[in-house]
Length: 139
Image 1 (cartoon, helix red, strand yellow):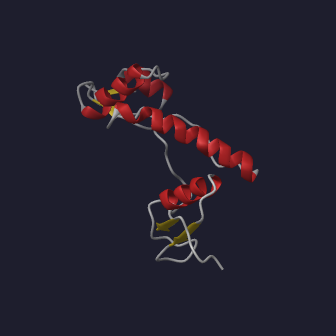
Image 2 (cartoon, rainbow, N blue to C red):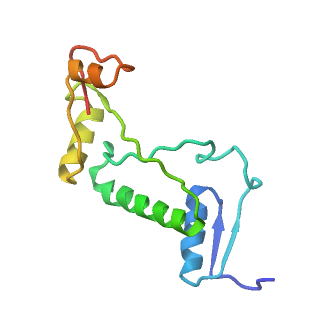
């Protein structure tokens, strides 16, 4: 029985579990608890699919954190022996001046991320599912 701890982590979802893991690796004594039982469906990380967007349109300054998360997930894969991530790519679709598109392009350009800007015709040829309006592009 642990009589004293260095850190108490309230909530063991994806963020709390990650904090607990890294603090314990640094030698801290941790006590973590959650309101729900393990495997519950009440958290933001519930489900089989999650997305890590590298061209983070909301805040280009967050790209180094996003990139670091990829390396940390790969580290967990190596430690566990289980594949956890499947890198696929993605599309942002909208007018060139829209925040979604302009923000993704800003992030990609500022951080040297590989990207393409596709016009309506090129996007339709490569990605037959989404239908772009004439004034839209895909990044």
